[in-house]
Length: 138
Image (cartoon, rainbow, N blue to C red; front, side, top):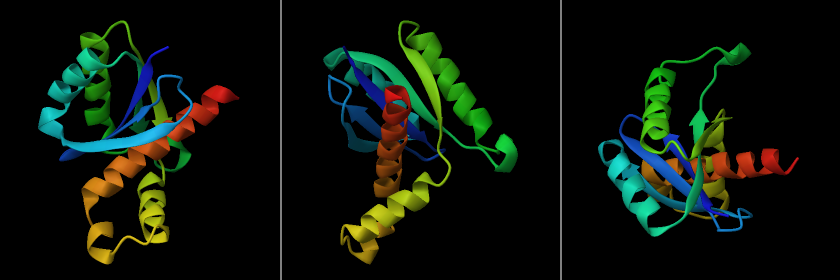
């Protein structure tokens, strides 16, 4: 069984999270500049066995796609083309940034660090991955 990589895709940064090899626990990995994400994925997949990808997918009310979805769709299409042996899954990322900010607040992180968008993106990826693992377990 391989790991699952999860992404909170943004135009500037991509938050990345990963499971343990048994796919039980979601761990925040890091935040990567969007321009470097494919290099990061290639390097990571060469070092670790990765079974699948999970990508946060934003929806507006009533499940209407919002502005960034076209960029996320391109990202998923490229993942599918580069890694045809790995399945890509979309998970609704609604409110993950707010949940990530709340997580940082509750963990006692200072105000300057809470404003760091990179931390929020990485924690959002973790929340997306945890949501996927919970859905998969049901």
